[in-house]
Amino acid sequence: MAAQEVRTDVCIVGAGPAGMVLALLLLRSGVRVAVVERSRTHQREFRGEILQPGAMALLDDLGVLAGARARGALEHSRFRLVEQERVLLDIDYRALPGPHDHLLSIPQAHVLDELLLHCEKYEGFTWLSGFRVGGLVREGGRVAGVTADGPDGGRTVLAHCVVGADGRFSKVRRLAGIGAGRNDAFDLDVLWFKLSTDGAPPGGAAGRDVRVYRASGSPVLVYASWPDRLQIGWTLPHKGYRQAVAGGLEQLREQLAAAVPPYAGLIREQVTSLRDLSLLDVFSGRADRWADHGLVLIGDAAHTHSPIGAQGINLAVQDAVLLHPLLVSSLAAGDASREFLSAYERRRSPGIASAMRLQAVQSKAMLSTGRFATRVRPRLAAAVRHTPLHRAVLRRIAYGDPRIRIARECFR
Ligand SMILES: Cc1cc2nc3c(=O)[nH]c(=O)nc-3n(C[C@H](O)[C@H](O)[C@H](O)COP(=O)(O)OP(=O)(O)OC[C@H]3O[C@@H](n4cnc5c(N)ncnc54)[C@H](O)[C@@H]3O)c2cc1C
Image (tube, rainbow, N blue to C red; front, side, top):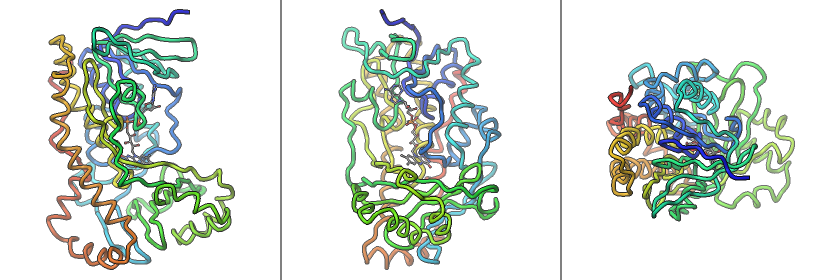
């Protein structure tokens, strides 16, 4: 059976934060958009849930933050690095101007469902959920669309421009023959699991924080998530999982309990099988290029970050906001050439390079386990705590590039 054809202005592959924010911005500008998403729901078990103030401000400006929060979210006031009993690093988000003076732990589904609700109000929106992109349509040397398979057969989506917003293992990027630029230096494995606190979320609103523990061995990321869960990510050296499980479940559980002593009881009670743990391969990278004739890559598909600084969503949302006016002009000019679309890469590259440098420093500062680093870390943390550098780092982590604003002048 021949695939049904869909004609649109912009075809976005992937309904993550980057794809959905871009879709809504374009729809509000009178552009027809098709979003092709392989999964049928936005339930994402092991995805980042921490929103930085920069992403919150942009989502607020788009009119979706309040609705997303109303579906359930928790505020965290600080980011802390705790070694043994000592707090080495204490980043207080309350020092930022309100109303976005905190970190928000919010299931990605709450944000994405709210974005979808807004997109569905526009006639020009085509939602292809449950459709996996498997090919690119090429016409005269440019990308002119995608082919996708779904529950009721195939679709060919033809568009002025295709946007690959399909995440860190981007199929669109691979189909376009663009290298992922994976940076092996920051490879980590993370053993991720959730604990139930049965009822109220742990920690009062004032005291809640996102925390990296360095009690023994590998550092552990811990935060309370809605409604009454603790999310725990135990970092391991890349491919270190086999060694970690070699001694069996009992030994692994004791290692985890020793790594986060306050939750040792819950770990012993609730981690009863290796199936309770998810192994995630975490890496960073920057695709060789972000634009081609008829094609742009954004979000994790263009640049992937380690989850350590909780930057991925911030950067993905900012990518969409920056690309939006360029795509509106590209449509108006009838020009989706690589030269035209590369303006996005030129404008965005310095911000991404700077975020990557900062994350490399953060990773080293938080995760390195050598004796020198362990001795120097507390002194260094104490020395910078009250300096302008500390405030500059906070602003950079919280906002990314604060100059990126929604191009309201494009809205109809
Ligand atoms: C363990 C972990 C924890 C993290 N924690 C945080 C955090 O706390 N805060 C933070 O800001 N960031 C965090 N991140 C990073 C964050 O999740 C990503 O940076 C962010 O989701 C990127 O958004 P995106 O829209 O570019 O891609 P994604 O969110 O990955 O969305 C891509 C979408 O494309 C779809 N797709 C893929 N292939 C196809 C295909 N062939 N056809 C159709 N659809 C397809 C996928 O189903 C998915 O919905 C974390 C990442 C990891 C791995």
